[in-house]
Length: 114
Image 1 (cartoon, rainbow, N blue to C red):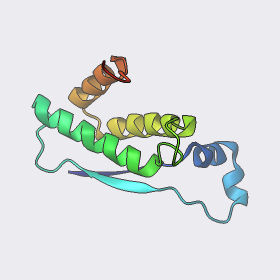
Image 2 (image 1 turned 60 degrees about the horizontal axis):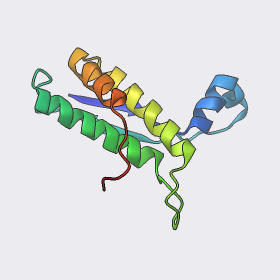
Image 3 (image 1 turned 180 degrees about the vertical axis):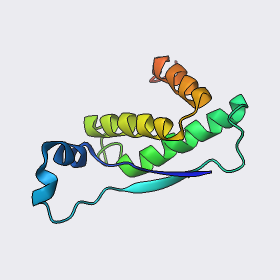
Image 4 (image 1 turned 90 degrees about the horizontal axis):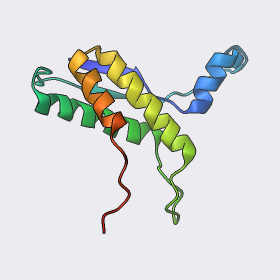
């Protein structure tokens, strides 16, 4: 099963929502295909694999994470990845994947261990 879903920047989404799309001759929205072939979404390990693929695709489409030479993560990157992952999970329409996504979103982010 292959799912292709549009992952774009927030600027592209804002253009579409505001109706400015009609005045824009062309609009590029990056896309990636996330493949679920060979995965059984009844198995937790396969659900985790699919989620990792969705996260990877979101990272590739929304990147770069930061500006070269700086460790600060761009806010637009964080927003884009969050929206793209949410759209990707919804596109698969799987209860097990949705539950896994909700569990991952609820976990606190650890920056570093000492």
